[in-house]
View 1 (cartoon, rainbow, N blue to C red):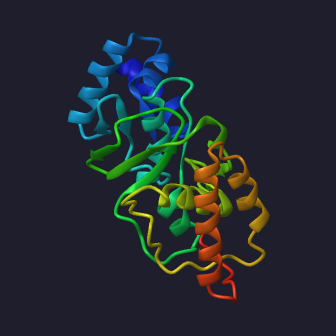
View 2: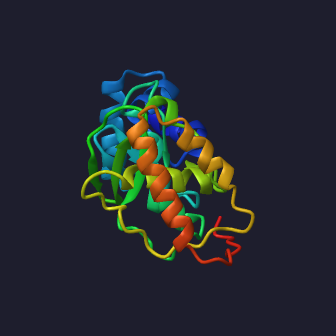
Length: 221
């Protein structure tokens, strides 16, 4: 257990407060099975928290938040999986809506279990076409990636066209000053399906019409 514990506090946790069993094993130079057993012992000592199978966190870290778990959860989808906080979660963090979603919405490049409930939060994963996965950057805490304001809005518009979508009726939206309308238009232009592209375009036009004419400068980041 000592090798894993040393690796955690020397290398793993300083880089990210949430991590996978595989990451701990690599840092400690032990097998994944050995790392899993040792991490379980550390959890029983209340030094770390088991988030879900294969993912752990140091919830006492000043850098920890439920959002910080997202990168580790995405890695469960495989080494090539990509994902970022988006949709209502990102719009809220950017200060574009006042509502705080009860779940953390994550856009991913590979199919994952749609909903994951954990002791530190509930996460909902939305699979997106590979050519539409992008437009994200590190959050100010640098513990997870977040969609830009324009990409978060595009993602919401994209999924709002689905039947019975929870995004069909957005909370009152305020666009930041100098909101990059052209960035949303560019993402819409990447949609391969003409029918879907038209549906998203129509939703975008309606939303722009309904949005307050005076944009609000947001500083939620």
